[in-house]
Amino acid sequence: MLSESTVVSAPKPLKQQHLFQVLAVLGILFGVLVRLVQYLHRRSLWEDEANLALNIVNRSYLELLQPLDYNQAAPPLFLWIEKAAVQVFGNSEYALRLFPFICGILALVGFYQLAKRYTTALAAPIAVILFACLKYILYYGNEVKQYSSDLMVSVTLCLLLIPLRHQILNRRQLLGLGLLGAAFIWLSHPAIFVMAGIEVGYFLVATRPQRRDILVNRLPLYLIWLISFAALYALTIQGTLENQTLAESWIERYPRSPLDLVWLFDAFGRFFYNPLGFLGVADGIAILPFALGCIAYYRRDRLLLLAILAPIVTTLIAACLKQYPFRERLVIFLTPLAILIIAQGIASLFTLSKQWRKPGFFVGILLLFALVTPPFLRSGRLMIYPTEVEEMRPVLAYVKSQQQPSDRLYVYRSGLNQFIYYAPTLGYAADQYKLGKSLLAEGGGKKLQSKQGVKQFKREVKSLQGESRVWFVFCRASEVEEQAFLSTIASLGGQQLDQVHQTGAMAYLYQMNVD
Image 1: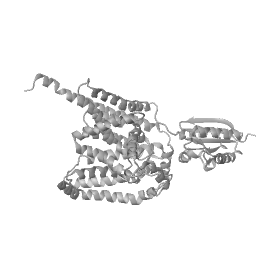
Image 2: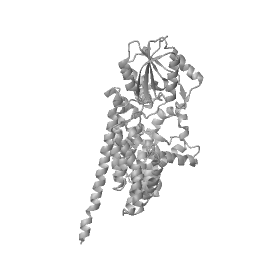
Image 3: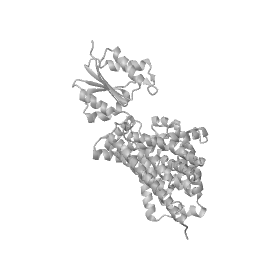
Image 4: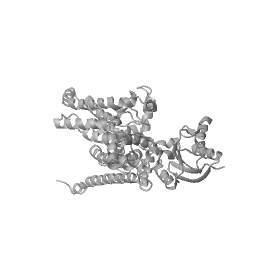
């Protein structure tokens, strides 16, 4: 027979669980709202987006299988979806960012399901709020790149594959997983690491009879995945790897050897800053709950910990073999797994402490405040001040509104592809502008170019001296470049008539035929 005290206290855990579920749902709604505000703000395409957008807009579906221009790389199914969106909805930022935006929302909702299944009741809202608010996860949900779909694919594969463990699958499951996995490989390059990591991890810890049964049962599934990946590699990846500029840009993201422990610890530490998005000292602080979370999962369910860590290990192995870079946005697909562990680590401090007077409880509060509050406040600020990177479109729109029929445009080299993308939509004819070929600064704009480089820029400007009025359009110009430009124009006797500045972009109007 239950005592009176038992009857009174029994509902308390249920009330707590309900509260945690409400907090998690509120976290989802907040994340969706922030993402929607970013999408509707319609910021201009920055350089990397414009580079990929030009491929999407100007190529056919078959041509998108070939190595891309402007040192770009993206999976073909992602490119085809983007191409279809442009054809259906028109060439605009809204159309180009629609699929990444949808993927960001689906990833957020899917991650909630992942957290609800594989974390404790207290850890779930912590995980969801982090996933909803962390900087890079939020940012890439509104960029014309494949990283948002990488997240969505990773979350979906975890939802599908983690619960399978050593099950024997029926034909319907094999066919469904086979076809979906084959499609995901063409949608997300790192999908293969999630699939291989979870499946190989489970296979290695299975008993010998289980291994035999799993291999016989799932062999058709693995063959479908391998055929899909082999076709993708032959048709697109192999050609992309021949791009020397891309290959050289990845060199620093690889270890010098498989035993390069310095690189391993550095890559591990950097992961918490970017792509996880714990900024400042928070990236170092986040390592503590990550370690605690691994311990908590190990005590709770070792197979589950294996499944969560396996894709991370697989990606690290690929990096050691110099097959896939382990840095920044390229490994953002691993962030959902790390967030689960971090959230569980924070929650474990409260679970173990039980009483608020114990030190672990206060450590949990400090970690919660240090890791959750900053991204939450930053995301809230984005509701009022959405992200802007290089606002070329409003600069060009202002120039167009003020432009006289005889005006010419000079577009500085660092903003060429943004201008090339926007020029047709704003009605610029080829004889109205000149595309610059020289740079005034080097080293990321921090150091003035050699005298020869400055002279080349000066010659380009001199060719415009016969024009009455010239608009000089800049994007991503540093203070060094801006000052060098102003002094160069002044030395040629140009008279400034107007100027417009936006985030990361600007334009100056000069009268160039001054005696």
